[in-house]
Length: 209
Image (cartoon, rainbow, N blue to C red; front, side, top):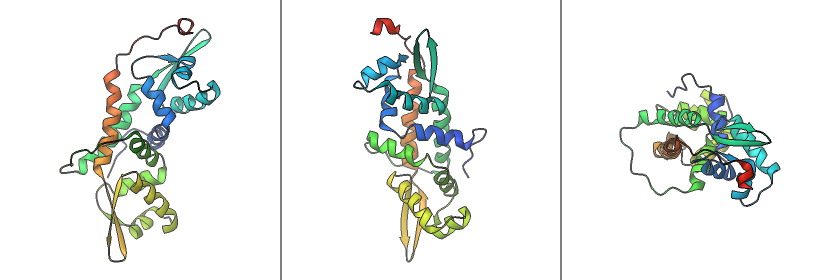
């Protein structure tokens, strides 16, 4: 069974939710090497409005993925690398159930975002935990989770489309297992951020304007 140890499930889900949006991924990519203020982020992101960006920065901050500090009138954002490590370690737990993993195929940003989106729901997290040690059919999953098949089908479809589970049919029954390769892909994506632990200092916002 997967253990979240001392990390609250809601904390993990919040992190994956924050990573499931293309614009927020772009923000994190920009913050990989240096601290940036809101006006610089708006400029680099194609001139989006501060009001639109503020919503996404709030989501990233509440998920613990970025830190904010105020310097006069300016607010600067930087990565909170410890939260990336928490999410990376959560995904690494799934590798304990693999004897051998096949080689990775090419990965697109959409592939990564869909994976994080699928991980951002409490019920889907419960499904993955149940599949941590064995293959289960839909009826067994419904029984363990106390939900209807119609409700569960939507979540299983999301997990399958994100590549996190495999499905196989045996007569009238459909059985689900984890696709551990996708967990490794997401884990490696998060691990990339640790390479930037030493970041460049921010320029003053006055110089940037």
